[in-house]
Amino acid sequence: MIPFLDLRAQYSSIKDEIQQAVTGVFESGQFVLGEDVAAFESEFARYVGAAHGIAVNTGTSALHLALLAAGVGPGDEVITVPFTFVATVAAICYTGARPVFVDVDPRSFTLDVAQLEAAITPKTKAILPVHIYGQPADMDPILAIARERNLIVIEDACQAHGAEYRGRRVGSIGDLACFSFYPGKNLGACGEGGLVTTSNARYAETIRMLRDWGQAKKYHHVLRGYNYRMEGLQGAILRVKLRHLEAWTALRRSRAAEYAVFLKAADVVAPPEMSYARHVYHVYAVRTTDRTQLQRTLQSYGVQTGIHYPIPVHLQEAYRDLGYTAGTFPESERAANEVLSLPMYPELSNSQIEIVAAAVKSGERVERVAARAS
Ligand SMILES: *Cc1c(COP(=O)(O)O)cnc(C)c1O
Image (cartoon, rainbow, N blue to C red; front, side, top):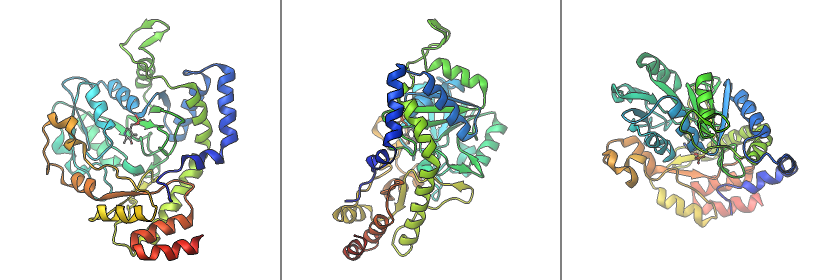
């Protein structure tokens, strides 16, 4: 069986470091925020090239607080894409603002810049592009339009730790950026975690207060805040894992390159890396017009797959009241019907990739390749 994700393989490779970090937290007793979290904040901010990092409990909270710091609230509109994980849109709704969708580019699956200006209204306050699957959105034209219209740009970088846009790491490009450390993300906690990066000191200070009950100092509540604090254990573990992130990213990228070679002859479209991008392959999604069959074939050869995501947010039942109907965002809807995510993690072996690729190409050849690989 080839699993879709193997978190245990990663754990075995760094078991001693993790254990030491966990012991350190128990010795210090700093279970919420504390020194490890503070150190992780500055180490991660330095890694992406931003001045400030503010750690929170989830990527969703990171999005919520970034939007609040940007001044987004009831009556405002925030532009984003419908082809994303639901949290992007949920966070906009938490603020009382309205999400306004722009379709995605059919190659990158990120915000289609050509359709951005038409979505801007006098109520638009911010643009929230999503670096989906680990591929950055086309940030320069988005920033140019935002500057001209006086809009704030918030990156949803929850799937894109270490991804680069024209040589700059995501997280340092927009006014604010949000990361998730959900266990399956490229940098994953042993539980939940998230972080906002920004180079704006005022935004950073607001978010720092909002995540901890809006306190300027203990029991002095300047803002109506939240309990969105990161746990000490997660901070300590994420510090350890951050040291390995570049090596893991390099492995993901070489696995993706191997897939691309093996899949050349197959009847699927491999994910392109945009010319401006360093893709970090959080998800390796191929496109096929016969997804149900392909998924069934792979399943029969013990290859686990995933679908990210089967329904675009504008067609989700929970967001029906936004008033969007089927056909409004054809590229997002087509992507939702055609994408299939293959196993992707740094520890995936070359022979496993060969088996997956052979299974994609033709079910019959799989046994031969599997026999050769074992
Ligand atoms: C994972 C994810 C989130 C939410 O992060 P959580 O840590 O699960 O709250 C938001 N946006 C995108 C694109 C994600 O993939």
